[in-house]
Image (spheres, one colour):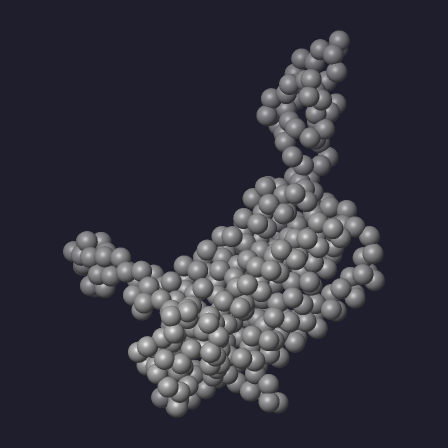
Length: 348
């Protein structure tokens, strides 16, 4: 198979997964009377890309939340709910928009749950992740819209990383092209259009979306720095930015998709994201014209250790927490508890 020298080569199939020899461990389990398991642990490149994206988004979101005055690390209390709900939503959306692959005669129902076989959708992840994030925010005391605004640039960063998983999997490429950055796809690929010549190049839609998403990160950070949008309006900007880009990229992809009223379902999802983003801006500008008073809901504020304490005085940790009373106060000096944090709710 001959490719143009200026084209983008697809990774070797060996790069699609990382195989680790665990024969020693599985042999030990077998010696204990357990069934004989595979001696090779396989980690998909796609999964690694998604994990990298989650880590990048978590770090960026944590920094942004902390800069707003939230407790360092509180983002972990939220993503522990958002991630599993996001995975469930991503899988459910994919299954419901590709029913022919999972429901019908001769298809085992358990394939609906086989996420490791591939098949997740970002729009479903947004819906499920939003539900999980709302739960996490309620439990941690963080305002949901504060978290959403802090997350907005991180979402695009995570999606940029995740798109490299499609590159490793040789999937979701675009229509044929003769551009110098055309993507090489082997003719044996199940998604290779019938009738095209061996060596045909395709639009690297994964790369287009990576570039669009990274540009979106820069745009959202700039908007946040200059305009300080709050109450979910920066997250609305994310929905609009991603929806516009996805509308374009989706229309040039050649992979099979359910069609509704002549339009791919993911294009409908992109249009819905744009609409929701516009509604958030309109509604929140009317309902919340001012700035958020705090990243926490009323009564759930977090106070940093030592806040309100005169730097010239030294108190023990117990005194700062209010766990100990001063049994022998010195009448010549102010009581330490005069500057204590009593009466303030702490969310750890």
